[in-house]
Amino acid sequence: MTTTSVIDPREVLTLIPYQLGFAPDHSMVVMSLTSDESGRTSSGTIRRIDLPPTVDLVSLAGWAATETEQADGVLAVIYLDDTARAEQAAQMLRLRLDNLRAVLVVTADGWFDAEADVSDIKPLPQDATTRIGAAMILREEFYAPTRETMMGQPEID
Image (cartoon, rainbow, N blue to C red):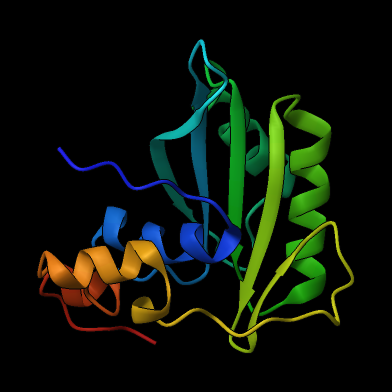
């Protein structure tokens, strides 16, 4: 098995769709992080949940805490175009997860670290511009643009 280190947020944002099999949208993804004796951190279980407009953010943070309670650390990625709602979700996660290391927010315009200034939006990485993306392309691994496409279902607006 080949191991690829995830060294920056761009690598994480590239990895998630490959792990899920599709590009998430209106979702929250939590990635468990584990550390070995040497202090090296690696990704563990990745969980995703839909973020409909009416989702209770307190319950959402509780779900994330339950899903990652055994992890040494947690990285959360919120895929939501509503920046204010994404920031509220990030705040709930900070309150509920003692092991939270970072929260990234992905919008239609790009991504930013929830701890940074919202105006500091960076472009989403192209697969070929990251080590993980390049490795996946070389292994001829791909992901579907949406969950519905992956499951062979028609997309519903």
